[in-house]
Image (cartoon, rainbow, N blue to C red):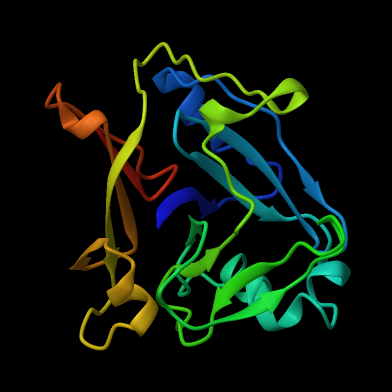
Length: 207
């Protein structure tokens, strides 16, 4: 089980991406998700990517297919975790299959069945690949002026860690208690540096 990508809730249009660009990240292509009602801005690394995600269509995100994902709540409720963590190719926790309209026929996303809104959205894609393996028009910029290569660890801070879901326990991610925060380690933190993106984003890079 590997991390495929992470999402972070942002405001419509994703202006928060400018903080990542100013730090020295090269922005890749963004997407609109027809039928799901979301859109994103993305930053790619050798093994995974960061997705800044927002609600683009209030009607679509409330439709019968998307409503069970609780994405509307996750992307609009300040008390909900602002994060989602996607793994590949499979996960050791129970999931239900979600097939949004923007995916090719037959492709599905597996979403954890027992994760509360106070935890990240845990999900997986069997079709995921490391960005370094993307080919043709799927290729994305992987060189960053900040010198970051690969995501090597995560630490997630939650309001409470007293009763974590089975998905959280199986994730292999470290947890701490406090306001929502995601700490991403790059390249095993070989330089011993860190950058705090608060208040723009609840995010710290360690590298």
